[in-house]
Length: 218
Image 1 (cartoon, helix red, strand yellow):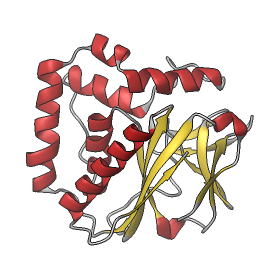
Image 2 (cartoon, helix red, strand yellow):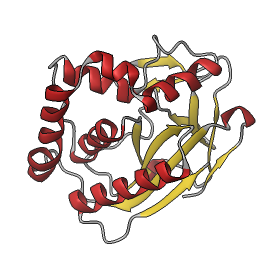
Image 3 (tube, helix red, strand yellow):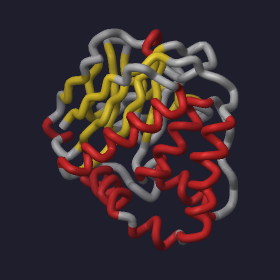
Image 4 (spheres, helix red, strand yellow):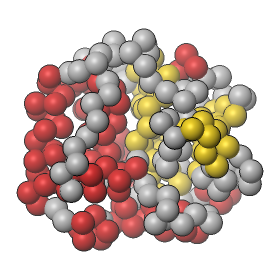
């Protein structure tokens, strides 16, 4: 899957993209027992809300939002929202193995992560700033304004964002090929390589993928 950055205002926006085949499931014992639950326990025992606000990656994400006309207190990065839920002991929703893996990676990397069903997308995908007046149906949110959001889009329109993803490309239990995207902002080259390695390790560990095609887009 080739993704092209189309907007000069997206200079600091970067993507780490992984494409892989999978057999999705409702629940994966290995993921919860060996990845998610230990991660949740570690965050609860060592982190505070003040730590979340001071996290470098979350600060860089919010700074990018602010520069592009978004109020970061209204439009929290999904990683910020997840961390706050865990620290407040509000728990995480168990959706499906791939969506749960998104949550694990978002907590681990402190970055927004989204996964998309490739069967629901067109071949050419771009990453740009959404125009004024743009909307789409957000997962669990109904129709939402995505004006000024950094968005992934294909020939049918926008479908993904580090703030809220759309229903159109959402993962289901029938998803057989997925594109997992880590949204980063102002990350160093070494940092991007570290994200790439972590994504490959997690996807291979949970899905046993024999081939994970990863790309870094800067």
